[in-house]
Each structure stands twice: as C-alpha cells, then as structure tokens.
Image (cartoon, rainbow, N blue to C red; front, side):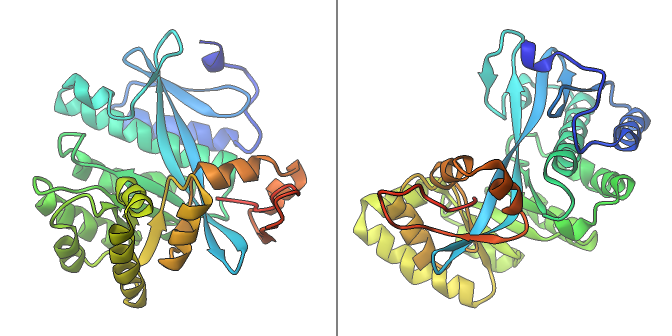
Length: 306
C-alpha cells in the first residue's frame, strides 16, 4: 500500500531520539514490531496488518467561539490491499494473551508518539481504553503506559483515559480507574447512556468526566422527549463537576443541543470540516487560541476547531 511505503527522512515534528527510545522500549517488552514512517506519520505492521493513528480535535464552544482543548486518538487498521478495517478487528482474531498484550502496547506507542510528533506537546491526548473488546487485557499495560510517558517526557495529566465498560467489565473498570489515577491520569466514562447501569456506574466510579453515547445524541435530535431528558440531566452533572464530551456532531442542531447541555468537549464532522477550510496559518494558530464562528450563511464559516 503506497501510504505505508517507508522513507528515510523523519517526518516533521519527530525527533530521532523519540523513535529510538520507543523502539528500544518495545524490544524490552518483547514486542516484535518495527516502527516505520512516511512523510507524515509513524506506523507499524502487526501480523500482516498496517496500524497507524488518527486524531480527532476536541473543542469547547462558548458564546460562538471555539477553543481547542485536546486530541482524541483513534486506531486505524489497513489491509495489504488498502481496505479499511474496524478498530476491534484484530481483537476478534482470538490472539493468545502474549500477542494481545503486545498489540495493546504497540497501539499505545503509536498513539502517544504520533500525537507528540504531529500535534505537539502543548495539548492533551485522550486515549480510549476498552476492555470489552480486548479480552480484559487492558490492565496489563497500565504500568507500561507510565514507562512510555516517562521515556517520552509527556506528563500523565496530559494523557486522559476514556473507559468503555459494561456489566462484564465493571469490576475491572474500577481497578483500571484506580490504577490510572494513581499514575496521575484524568479519566472519563465513554458511551454514557448506552447502558442501563451507566448512571449508577458514574456515581460508583466518580470519574472526571463522561462522553455521551453518539446513539443517545442522535435520538435526542429525533425525539423531543429524549432531548428534554438530556437537557434536564446533563447540566446537573456539569454542575457537579463532571466534564461532558459530545462527539460525532454532524449538524447545527446537534451542536446547539451540546451547547445547551454545557458540553466541555465537542467534536465531529461538522466542526472538523470547518477547520479544514481554514488557511494553513490560522489552522496552526488554532492550537493556542480561539476563533469566532461567523454565523452569516453567505460567508465562509470561521469556526476553527473540533
């Protein structure tokens, strides 16, 4: 696949010491994967599949202004002929424990390394932790993550963990939350509203925030009663100190509801598209400032980020 043809020169933003340190760490951990790079990113081949990282900007929208807050990492998997595969594909291969843990470690390295090289150190990174799909091996890389961040000199409070839990992984989730918190990470619950026990789990775990399930948000747009329930509950949770994330925002109506819920982190195709329309200089400046939303329909939108 042309995208994964290695080049000699490192991409801009990546230092040789970063690559060498991560490769050495992987060897020490018994991970048999070689880090490679093209002109834009670092990637790796695992069991015949190409792995790389995608990043979704997340922003706070207040008073028609946006401020970039952090990036959320996403695993990208490609086959040898360029086919795109779902993120849980490799975990459906029923790898043994050793190979599954090695895969998790490699993914963690790719996310942190590419974030530092492509996005810089000044903004936090959010990493998804989903023991539902990785056979409950998530607890095997907590200490590894700490060593990785230490090697790359990236503070733990800059790496937020988003936990995806269900009834089967509830106890493991409590253990993960405590261990990551001991290392200094912020934590949030993902897919909130998709499960019947989510509110009880929120009170029990007391995370720093939560990410609303995209399906819940879609129903809120379609059904006024669901929307009323969300608008009654979410501001109360915000008052109690939970940071709310609303993702997959695809229309102005969804953005308006997210703002009424007092969401701290907003992201999705609607805002990402507006970011891509910005000139290069403004897109770079977006990382440290805020731009207005121009509401006039006959002019180019100036929302700078999500």
